[in-house]
Amino acid sequence: MDWQLLGITFITVFLSELGDKSQVAAIALGSSCESPRAVFFGTASALLLASFIGVVVGQGTAQVLPASLVKGIAAIGFAVMGVRLLWPKADVPEESE
Image (cartoon, rainbow, N blue to C red; front, side):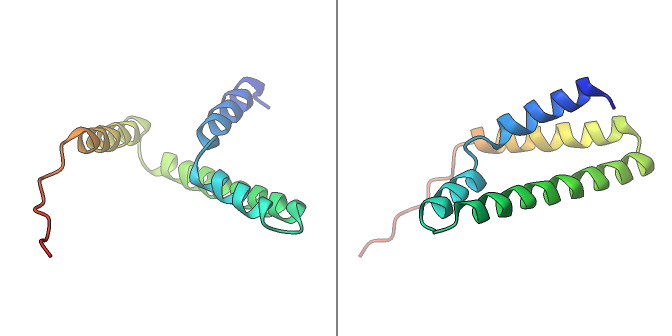
């Protein structure tokens, strides 16, 4: 097993999951239910399943498409999202009552 890759993957996923909406949902469910253990196992298994699907799809994609193409598509996608977030919204006139 590649321990360095395991550590990098853990740190990356751990940091990206901190404070996202699934964690907020887990906090809300955990605080409003009688069984926080069930919330923990439900959220942990959902993250495991989502990660497993991502790895399987990524492995399949890597066998079909060259890595440079996938990286290029990802870079363009992130650039488009970044520009879209920075682009000012069009002024929408408010409806008068």
